Length: 473
Length: 99
Image 1 (cartoon, rainbow over the protein chains, first blue to last red):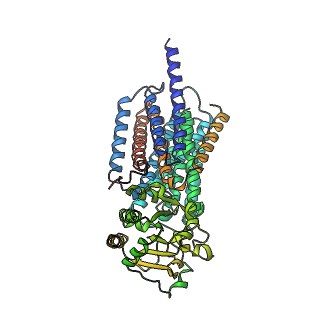
Image 2 (image 1 turned 45 degrees about the vertical axis):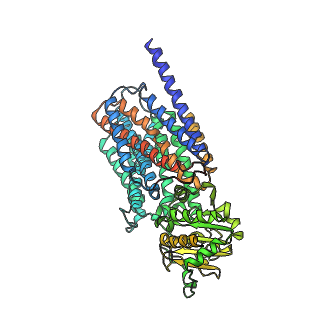
Image 3 (image 1 turned 90 degrees about the vertical axis):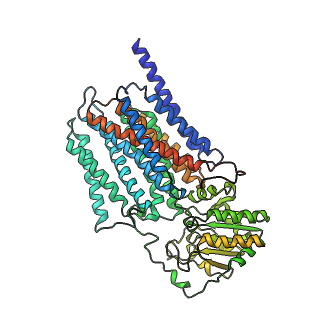
């Protein structure tokens, strides 16, 4: 009798796990459209909650219920503490951190399983299980320490890049030793050497740190989804060791999604994955050869009343926000100005380049947060044909994403990067902090066009002046 | 579990994730990444299984750490995602969002 109830409860557990895996797949699917994204989040949360609840009744979960609950409460409290007061400009670093915690969990699970495999009681572990446990431990550990460094970098706790001689050789060497220890653990005939296991984890964690410290801050957006690849694979692999298909499916789902995002971020930022990983050939470190060409030309300076007048009498305006706008926290002023223009019958649209924020989609989040409707925000492909018919294009703290040298100057570090065709508009207004070059130190020929006017100053205060002028017209 | 069945599961799940993500417009990429990070929190059930059958002190201690980290992943991932996803309301609600 107990055997029957036992097997029934095991079947129920498996069915619930299957349902939760399906909820993750459909949830992720729904997250790919603004109309259904919130439903997608609900699906995912339901999938997680039912999987966790049924696990309390899992046939292998027999003890430590009190400590398990305490651990959950402590973890949840930690997450609340870390998330409190986080601004949406800081979203990327929090995603990196939480992904890393998932990877760290997978590594911890792998550690316990490897200890158990070292002293098998009943069945001996298969080679596949041992290989996947070691691989999961390696990927999870690298993901964990690497995400902490990523967080510290984006947080400003670690500034710039850390380089030392023969860096890539040292890193490769450490990875090779870690893998060798891993292989030794697999080949050990059920005789676990504890020091070996400890060294293996220490080297894996060390490699994660060393891998991340030479990376450029500007490249971190490409690296964050790569952390999802590491953690997803680690979770899938330990899922196999625990004979848990829900973890296997969810882990690989996340890993593949992360891979796709990494590739598409790299493409839109015109960076190769090896260059990101090794911190080479960065936009920032390179000297621009195109910069000197325009250095003796003068850009035409505008006053805020001129700008207000031009925009008030325009029919089509396209606003291009850059990170300069977000840094100045000017997005609310942008929306205030846009509302005045829209009430005057002006068609105002926003053009967002994939790299405009800290990562693709980030700028959209910052804009939407102020109340700007998602329909008014267009990506590069949607809007690039529309610039020809725009009366005014307003650039706010944006430079590289409109830099025409990307089209023509083969020596430019951003050559071949897709740009927004702001230069095709009838009039261009540029709000810029100072007269120097921008983030990547590349001069923009667009600023010297005859139909371009510059408004120098802090985005927030310049826009306030424009808003006041608009109210007086 | 049979090795080839495992390979089937891994490959089919990976293709699903890749294809779904390929369809997403770039303005949803940050949201997707946050959502993917939340799905990662499924590792919590693995941590619970490890802790629920832990026999030695060291296993229990590592299990405790694992459950704690995974719970932080779950709750933190949810809080981040909820913050981003609440922006996808109907366009006519123009006043809203955080300060």
